[in-house]
Image (cartoon, rainbow, N blue to C red; front, side, top):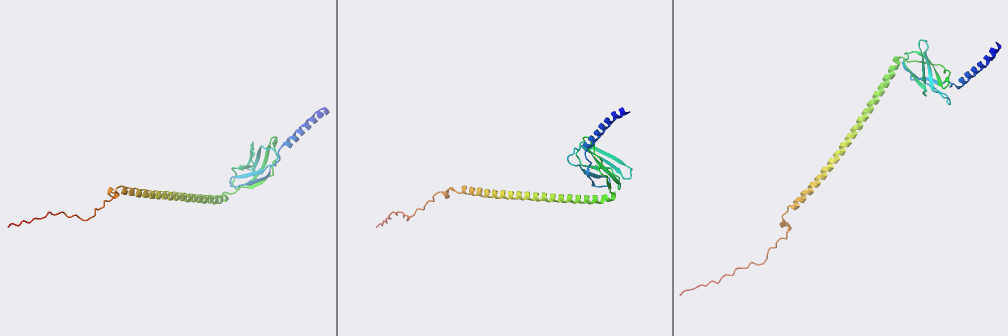
Length: 217
């Protein structure tokens, strides 16, 4: 019996040392566990992890305070520090605890956090107001877009009108120049030649032949 106890003691010592090493390598418990975005059937839980510790996942224990339902959520290979809780009962009390998952195991559970989901009647007014705000924002954006489009269309039309007016003016000027050139070409050549000077001087009288009167005796 003494020999058996002598062999058993080293084994117990080694086992206790392994447990101590495992516990030492486990990450610390999450801190600042809070519940936000409370609704009738969902909520969001978030937490913080102390710096300097390797955390590869998390585990969440979710249970109703009356003991009717209990759920265990576990996720690894993630660095998320928040989780959405779905399918919650309306107007019910819940208790959650969060654990960090490290390379050598899980941390101790965090402090218990209590929260209560909302009633459906409490959620509808807030949603209706939010929907109203979203609708009004959408209408305002549509009106702004319509106003901007109208301004752009009017500006483009004015630019086209100015271009057309300028083109018509240039066309009239070119047309007038062409008509003037044609008129100058159609003038008679006599207008361009040197006019004949009328010959001056007295009109010469024709020589009259002498008249001979013969008288018979």
